[in-house]
Image (cartoon, rainbow, N blue to C red; front, side, top):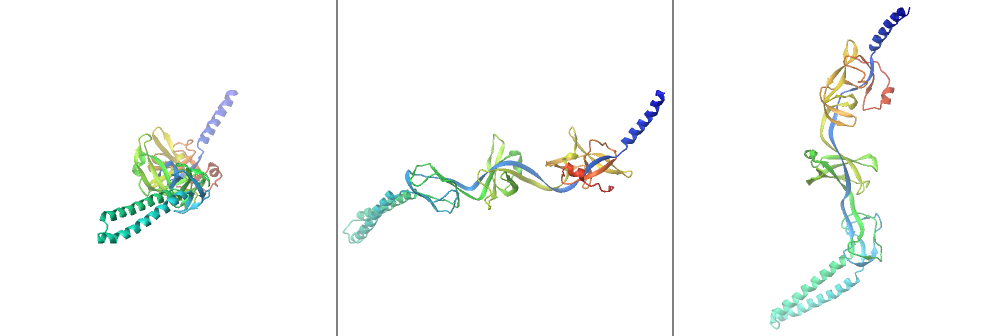
Length: 359
């Protein structure tokens, strides 16, 4: 009786397995698209203002007035700090009196020289006295200028580090001044990309402080040397900072785009890698049903979630993106969703199944 029961069950199991293998396998697919594609070079850079300087004193003198506040915008020529120059002004007044007296003496001597009452040497000596007095006045004027800290260009000052009544000393930093209308962004690029670095090449930069904003600029200059240690070259780009969002010292993530072109693109998850060979499963119509075939492809540049296809596929082909490990060439499939723009898997699963369109 047991033998008879086994004989009945085995044919039923075989029939069930054969039927299960014939069921179409559900998969997600993506269409091969031709889109704008560029090679991207990524780097980190540090911002600095277009013009920047640390304002320091060159003399030891008492500060009499500070004419700016922290973060104030100033114009070129504005006097930011004044120091005691009373002694120098007194010396200048004294020297100016000597100059005027020397000029008067020169006028008295000129007619006497013409009459021969005074020698030419006396006239030359008086002329020398005038030139010497003028030179002394220029020296004193320079000393007076050194007792004023003047803005060398338009910009914004930093925090002030001195107060009226303090004794200023040479080298002591008083404040900083930055022309932040345009920012310089310096970043290092590996030397292998040197041929792609050209003036006026556009870049995109992002800062952690402004995660949702892209700052556009262009390459302005390249360093004349490649660093022999890092094997990279320093690139400088200029970024417009009209809204004053960028600050010197800020870290920026730079994306440099080169070789713009039209390229065939597929999602990365569609690629099947075996050793050095790359392939995809392409949807084909066979006997009124959708099946797949294996196609070898050559890949180009990768970017986030996508890869460039150099050969093997054509625009409009559909490749399996999810479920490609469950099917083999010739396997019948049913398309559950068409992936576009790298949607999350949850959105694909919730995608409404529309009537299947034959290729």
